[in-house]
Image (cartoon, rainbow, N blue to C red; front, side):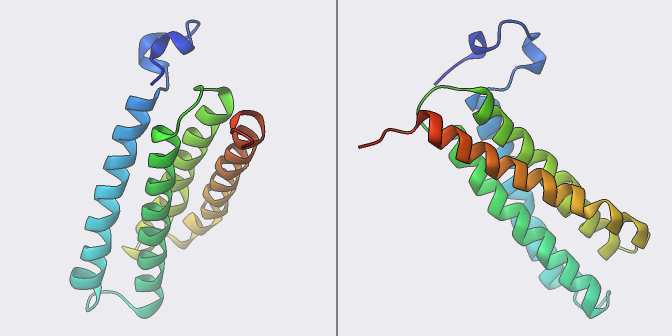
Length: 141
């Protein structure tokens, strides 16, 4: 596991490493399961079908990307800019994509839907960073 010496030019609070990413993955996963359960049991009779679908989509994307983030943290090899980019892309994407869908499902303004695609773009960037990392660092055996 790489520690904070992989980014000596950053102050300690701004360094991204496997430990911080793994903790973040755990938090996102925990919250995704809790949100999914809340949507299934607490919102079903309080919101319309469209809002419930937004909630379910948000929880599904959050849990999927929590697992992807865990793999980024747990993966072997160097802690490169591409690996950090994947982590930042996934966290930013979940915050924007799932966050805006959760907010709209709870009655937030529909204009938040204009921000949702930016979250999707961040998720795509995260996956692109996974591709770059794989091309540059994965063993070829």
